Length: 119
Image 1 (cartoon, one colour):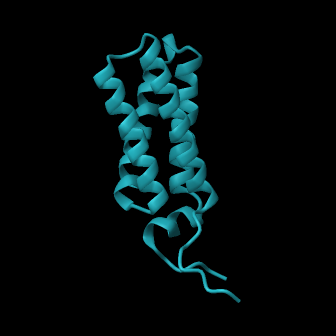
Image 2 (cartoon, helix red, strand yellow; image 1 turned 90 degrees about the vertical axis):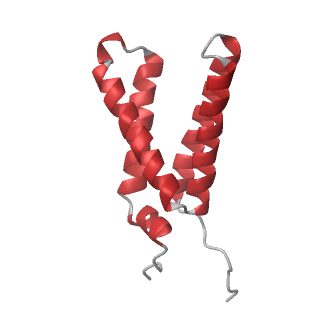
């Protein structure tokens, strides 16, 4: 058997990275049309890209801050549910999925704590 030097990214973490990349693309397109100012938009896009990269590399800090920001997004979305549009509901669902995918699956928890895989 060939020994692999690098661990494979678990599917839940890869899914979260994909969600963050899609969110960065959406935020960037909204910034270009009529969204927030360019400086605010660039900061948001760079933050999402940095979090996705950190999660991919297995950074516990990236997991912590992604969980904090996603939980804040869910709370804000629930508070503002009265005026929620499609993007608001998408924000609630996406942030809830991110929190669930980072905290619930055992493979995701092992990825960030660098525990050996059970066989």
